[in-house]
Structure formats: C-alpha cells, structure tokens
Amino acid sequence: MVHGSSLPCRRLLNAAIASTALSSLGACAQQSPSAAEVLAQRQEIEVLKREVDDLRRRYAELAAATAGLDAIRGAGVTSAAGPGAATVAPVVIAAPGVPFPSPDLRGGQAGSAQQNKERAEAVVGAEAVASPDFASLLTPAGTLIVDPTVEYSLSTSNSLIYRGVEIVPGIQIGLVEASKVERSSLTGSIGGRLGLTPRWEAEVRVPYTYRHDRFEDQGPRQQVNVIRTRTLDGSDIGDVDFGLRYQINGGNNGWPVLIAGLKITAPTGTGPYDVDRDDDGVVQGIATGSGGWIYEGTVSAIYPSDPAVLFASVGYAYSPPYDVDKSFGQTRVGEVDLGDSINLSLGMGFAINNDLSFTLGYKHNFVFETETELDGETVSTDSAQIGASMLGFSYRFNDRVSANTSLELGVTEDAPDVRALLRIPVSLQVW
Image (cartoon, rainbow, N blue to C red; front, side):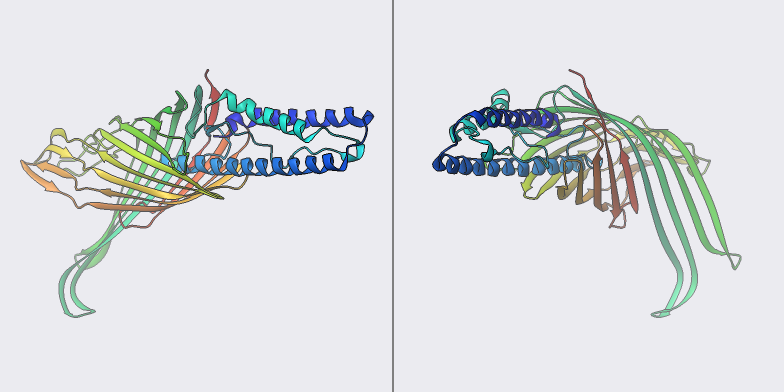
C-alpha cells in the first residue's frame, strides 16, 4: 500500500523543507520583498497546503483500502502501512504532524512564488516520473510477506427429539431426548505472499489443526435420565491452499479497484473417510481436511468513500466428486460430492492513523447439498447457510512487522459460534 513509498515521500518532503529553509537564510542579505510579492507567496503556499491535505486524505483512503483487501482475503486485516500494504504511485505524502514549509517573512524574502512553486513541483514530480499512475493494493513486487497465524474456532449445536403424543399445545405425554455437540479447534498455520508484479501476487498457506469434539446425549433409559458423553481428540496437517490474485485496474475515473483471485485447496489433511471407525461405522478419530479438491474463483471491489473505504467480494467454490470406495461396517461408500458454495462478503475499512486501522463487515456462504453414494443409493444432506459478522483491528509496529486480529460471530444456525484469529505478518525484501 502506502508504506512501501511513504519513506521516500517523507525524504522528498524533508528535502523541500530544507530547500525552503536555505532560501530563507540566503535571503537575509537581500532587500525586503514588496507587499505584492508577499501576498503572492502566501496565496501560493495556501494552494500547496490544500494539495498536501488532499494527498494526506488519499493516503488514509488507501490505508483503509488495504485493510479491506485483507478482510476479503479471509485472514483478518492488514495494518494501514504495515507489511503487505499496498504501494501507491505517484502519491507523495507528508508525514502526519509535519507542517508544510512556509517562509519566515520576518527574516527577509523566502523566494518568489514562482520559485516555491517550482520546488514543490519538483518534489511531487520526482515520484510521478518514476512510476505510472497506478495504485496497487497487492503485495509490492519483490516483497515476501511471511504470515504466521493462530486461529480458534468454537461451534455448538443442540437438538431435541420428542417421541409421544401432544394432547393440547404445551401438554405432552411421551419421551424426550436431547443431544449437544461441541466442536472446538485450534489451528496454527504459516503462509506466504509474494508480489510478482504491481498487478500479480501469489500466496500459499500450510495449516496444522488440533480438534476436540464433545458429544452429549440425554434421554430416558430404563425410566431414568442418563447423560452419555463421548469425546474425540486429534491433530494433523490441514488442507494446503495455493492462490493467485490479479488487480484489474487502478480505481481511476470513479471506478472501484477490482481484483480477481483463484484459490486451489489440496486434500492434504485427514478427510472424513480417512479416520478410523468401529464395526458399526461410528467415527473414532478427527478429520482435519475436506477429503477433496476445491477450486474457488473470486472478484473483489474496493471503493474509497472518504473517510472510509467500502469493500465487497463474491466467489464460487467448485468441488468435483471423488471416489471413496470403502466399506464401513455393513455399508459401502462410493462417490462423494461435497457440494459447491457461493460466497459473499462486504464491509467497511477505516484507517485511524498511519499505524492503526479497523474493519467492520459481514460474510455469507451458501453451501449446496452434499451427496454421498451408500450401497449404490445416493443420499443428500440439507444445504447450509453460514453467515458471520466480522470485526478486525490492525496495528503496525514498524515498516516490517504488524499485528492483525479479527473476530467473527456466527449469526446463522449452521455457522460457528465464534472464530478468533491473530496474525503477525513480517515483510521481507526478496529483490
């Protein structure tokens, strides 16, 4: 984002300040300026101040845009000017809190209005000549972002089964059975993003997951309520994913920045039909992967709306059927189709300052039915609606390291109750 060019911009601006100061010192031996010259200088300085204020506003907008982009990536938010932030050209921004240089008219002439204008144009033009008019929000070319991540997820579900007769509403005669399932997981992963060009970036992520599942059944047994509890624990590598992103445009002429992405998830984790089962087909282990390949395409839009940035993304994930061809107890499992999904996310990013930013958003996945061939017959599950609200914060420690946190709260029955994530991206210059 902006951090890649903010240091050169500050050096250029400091050079402009020094140039103006030297002009003021050198002018002490000259005669005092006329009233018309002083007025022209002040008017020109006010124009330049307004231009710098506008550039600062664009700086904040692009900072928030990068926070929104990282929320779209699905891994929280990125610091306003931290590792992996976008590079912007030809924007030149003064450091926050540093006033634009102004002449000391009490000491004599600080240079003519034309001279001040030429110096300012030289500062802004130096960066403009070096880069095309394109604002890249992806990882800067030649930069590698090493992205260690820790994620916690908790999901619970409750069901109540009644077997009997309802005489009138509220009065029931019969048996009631209740069950509760609680699934928690802790995943540590190491990821990397490499900027290939200003328009292209590549990404890979390798996760390792620990899961703990707890099942409780409460129901009548010999006319006495009994709670039966069963737990499962396990850990293994998860599904590794690879991705490419391409920035379609620079967001000029009122258009949002458009980014296309492709992600491939490989079935490297333990699939649901790879775990051990007893003679009745009841699972005795934990799955850490989906069991099949997944191909996902996305299109994202990021639009500055001062003082925030709006972002939205839509995607489609395709999972081709795969053949299990295994027997569990007396049941033979053949072809399995995990079901495709449609993904939508939208929200807002806001850069509080150069180091701190936050995002608010919502994401929703519609998962089609899963079809499984059992003893030659196809059995389908219900479709799922997975919706969650998102809140993320990011803080930049320096030009290389930042900390990003995000929290998702499930708002639909099929969604996990909570998902918390912490990332510490570190920026390395490869070339």
